[in-house]
Image (cartoon, rainbow, N blue to C red):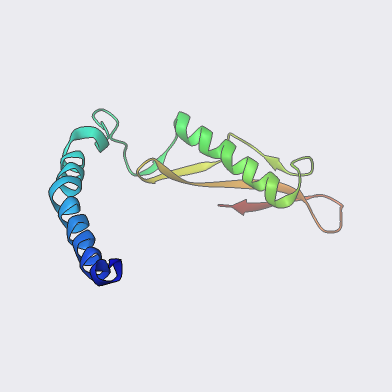
Length: 117
């Protein structure tokens, strides 16, 4: 008896799910998207694009030092000076940081300066 109605029940469940999605779930999702729940308050935080230097760029430089440390081992042989870095604001609080790094040369006689971004 159930085999007779299985195709009919499948179709009814699919139609029911379709109606549930269109009448209940999607209107709720549209209300949430239209609300101010996901709006970021950016008043007063407009940042100029281009070369900048502030607390955020200092933090970005510290992050770059950690990335350099992860990639090349340690900072014992390298000298990253926080006074010599340059940072550019790109957008959405993203920065490009460029800094000269003093590393021992390959002969071990002195140091050479390389630029990393």
